[in-house]
Image (cartoon, rainbow, N blue to C red; front, side, top):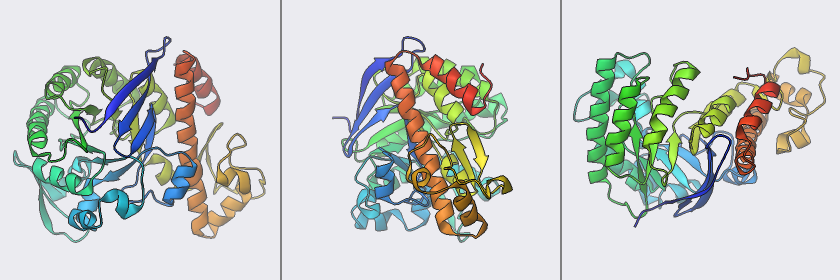
Length: 374
């Protein structure tokens, strides 16, 4: 028995984008889906009830950070991540690979795994595929990820090829070490940098291992947008049609829409919460910086077309005041709105798929939001 099941509901005749539903032990979520990121068992600034109010159907938490603090064994003792954070809907945990590799000077890669120093206290740790599985098994998340090697951009072809080969070997070890396949779905991760031949090679090798879902990693790390789209176009055709496809670390509106057009079902990113805490707000007319002086006497909502709690109840002038005064509520309201904006955007994407007009929707959205229409 697989822990999850992907249900394909509709394919957009205009683009080939997929409307689907993923069924998990903690409920189902509609795709294409954006997953808010709750790195340390909380989506910054949001309570579980507030996330439900904006219809977040699934969230993501981070294996590395939870391993470092408070520890996977403590979370297991508490009854698992769902009970620990009081979230009864689906959870996906990443493998921790991206965080480990982002430590750069603090880590060393070998075939066994990655030795690194903690960003918290400098203590030394060895992260292996087996440990990544042990941590995620203890957390009890519905979807878990293989431990992979995330290479930097740019990267030489020879190194990228060795990385792909290592990622495949680590995926084999992850599958062998995974102790709870009937309740937790383990996704394989396709790597390969911006090299088409390596992306195809990686996709074929990872798919041959027969995972219940597949992620595309190592993109949105600094490469031009067109390179990312090119990698999706050469990779997705090699992924099974009856299993979910997840593009890791992507959350800007253009990437979400373009990714859906290219057959992606799941996305995640810290972007909406991070920029919200810094006073940048996504609106139906593009981004605004709510701290700017021009909003000091603007008594309209952040986005006139939004019905989130922040836009229903507070003005730009008030939220700007909160930021200038250092009040926590300002950060929360901007975060709340940005998450609602992206979740609503994905609902519009799903509706456009139903109506067979996703390309038209993209062009209309881009022209208003301020992107160049390709």
